[in-house]
Length: 439
Image 1 (cartoon, helix red, strand yellow):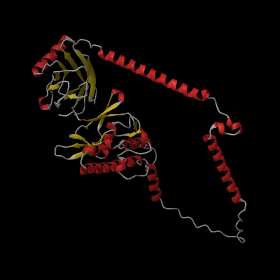
Image 2 (spheres, one colour):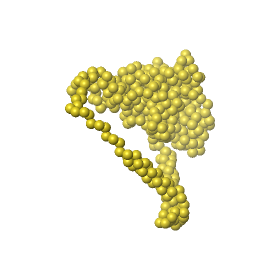
Image 3 (cartoon, one colour):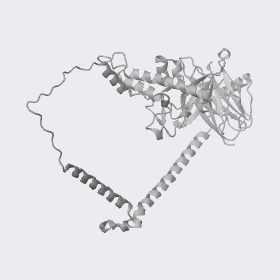
Image 4 (cartoon, rainbow, N blue to C red):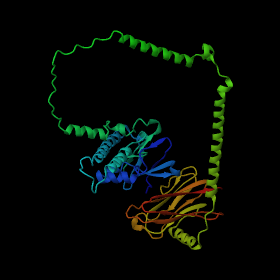
């Protein structure tokens, strides 16, 4: 069983398109499922913000499976097939956005029971923004068990800050389209018949007046204007390029060197002071964060400790030099994974890692063997000092969902037990916390 993580990206250097509500994954995928089909909605990976929004984790949408592969890792024919399928999907989503924008165009009177023009424009803009990506690195594919591929996008709804005048990599897969407003105006103009007006006739009561003779001095005025402009440009260039000592008359004034360099020195001093204050502020924030995270959690009641020991013993959990356990109540499928200080993962995949972590108890999967008192456990034979990031994922996808409370417990020989409490509310799926191991 995989937790569905595709990749983790940084929001630095990217420009998010539209408002936060327009970038809602539920809004985009729900609209496409209702108006097109699930295949169109399945190209958008599900984003989960971490570290205060500085980084984004992208997950495979519920109901999809496969091994994520970046576009650059595909062979030539496979990459061209993914691009062609994305170009077709891109065109259909753009057509849907144009259709939504024009929904109120043919209505008479105020809308009753339907979205207003402003709502339709807002939704159409959200769809157009969603199919924009910053570059080709945002295009991935899911390789199915039978070897087939299906496209999927990360960093959707975003562009590079340095290319605001150009659209994203996905837009170049389809031909340019006129803006919806211009297309609608052109369509309306072609649908209406041209009004029939009688051709205007000109009747002269006498002979037409002779054309005005050109004035011979007009050309000289134009030439004089160009000469004045050339002289003005030459004067400006002379003032900008010539050294001050070579300028004649009152233009030969040279400012004192100290007066010229004083503003530059003051600006440099201000920049150095700002950098020093910024470093002090960052150091203070890190000290406060470390002090808060190192604070010991309140001791758990004896009944909770005994219940956790009973569950671990009943499931045959291993007791290493350090253990991190996840405990909850009910038949929900909840998964536990831990990132070592180096970034390597200890989870159900049993991947090798440098902190000796291994998940030895997995609960409530498949649903036929689910229990009411589940527990998951990862033991570490050779834990290393540093920061361990614990991630909890709720995998059950059968609505409606209620709130689900759980606890994460860290145990090490010779140190007090640490416990963190968490709750999934409604349709929440991801939760994380961190433990600092000093020795």
